[in-house]
Image (cartoon, rainbow, N blue to C red):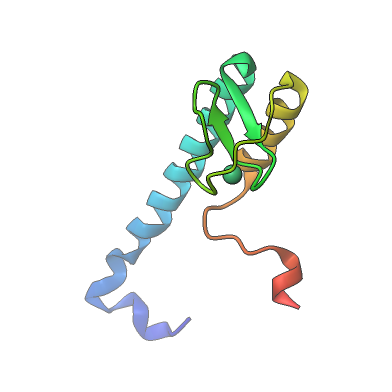
Length: 94
Ligand SMILES: [Zn+2]
């Protein structure tokens, strides 16, 4: 970070940080909702997305194999709730 950024009009960039926090919070809240009613969801076997139970195919990868178990849905919700939207798998940072 440059020191000049404090006097730069674009210091409003802080708002992006706040928005990110909000969206992470929103994700956590969504994860909580999923964990409360895991029977309404299923986990895609192809990409591990959480999908609503009535979806015929995965909207993300168009897979049609799902894991309906509440245990799996809950653990996946935990993972998704904690992961930042922009995160990269550690293996790709090597
Ligand atoms: Zn999928």
